[in-house]
Structures are given as structure tokens and as C-alpha cells.
Length: 123
View 1: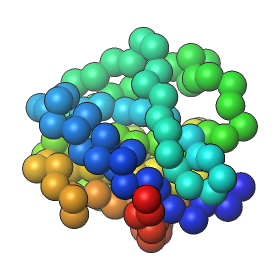
View 2: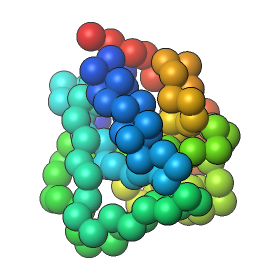
View 3: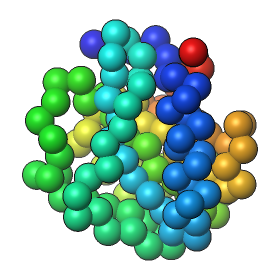
View 4: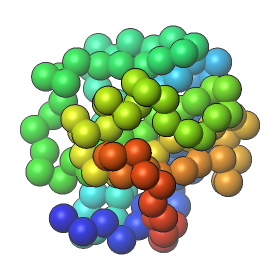
């Protein structure tokens, strides 16, 4: 699966989820359609707090279009934590962190190994 971008609508939804859950984190699984990350799944049984959000991997839907994850950092730090780096490889190749104050520039995308990658915002 080659990912060429993320939809503007989904990115806006991620910022909104960050604002709604603040000061707690949120976590979601990202899905792609036709090479664009367009959808998300909120996993049943997700546990959220001010410093972390987690779910049980066996609660993930079976989906060949799973492309990665998205979660918030209410402290505004856009770099992945050590826990993020352990989590990333379990759910896909692209991982988005949105941070406070959840404006249109308050996000970064990482590969499963934690390296920063560019993700085009598309309609």
C-alpha cells in the first residue's frame, strides 16, 4: 500500500478530537482508501489519560486498509515518546501526532521507526 496523503477533512477531525479530549490524550487507528488516509477507527475499550492513551491490539478491526495511528499530545510536544515508538510498529506505517493548541500546523507524521515523514494534505 502506497500512501500519498491525508484528507483535509480527516486532519481537521483529528484536531477536533484533540480539542474535545483535552487535557487527555486520544488514540485512533487510521485507514486508507485509494492511497489516501481518509478514515479512522476509535477502538472499543480505549483507556485515556493526561499522559497516555492505549487500547488492546486484539480489539482492532480486521482491515487490510489499516495504515497507522493518530493520537494527541496535550502538552503540545509533537515528538514521539518512547512508548509511542514501541506502539507505532504494531498498527501500521504512518503515525500522526497532533498537539495543543490543535491548529492546522500542530501535527507531524512519523514512520513506524519514528522517523519524520512528509504527508501531503489533499482534498
